[in-house]
Length: 203
Image 1 (spheres, rainbow, N blue to C red):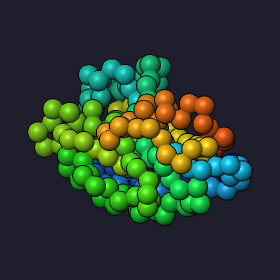
Image 2: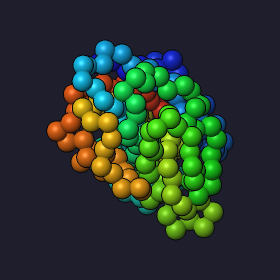
Image 3: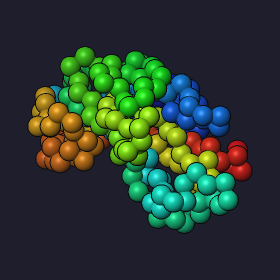
Image 4: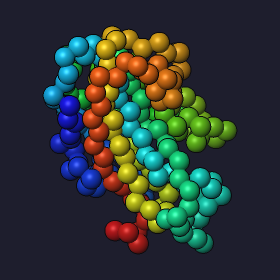
């Protein structure tokens, strides 16, 4: 199974159009185009995750003018998208079809592929306690890495072909819930990643 995108080259830079943030603030926040083929026999649904494995782990270093986050700082996953129950005959996600703009406090009913379910992304936790932005962030919300991070962030779009039509998930599910629910049901996996940075010293 293979997955690719017309929106960015494999391992290449993701355009700001598909990010949540850019140098001067919020960006267009459109989901990128994705397409796949080589699906194994017996596939009854797909799950899709977008994960940045390069998120800083020391919050007090983020967004500071007086320091740069070192490349060697330990990193953690930051989930930008979690989708389950994508129909087995789907082979394409059109650019901007699931996200086109930013909704303060999170999208209540984000658009998506017919019949599929979209879970919470990690902006839910990042904005928790923020009076203007705090809320449940369902669906896709794109890259917004710290401008003072010396590491170029990678954004992995991971597609799983499953032997079940639906996954047993709570209403407010996360990527972690998807991982647990699809254990023993994965027929194949494909991934592609793009990069993004807002650090002017890396451009």
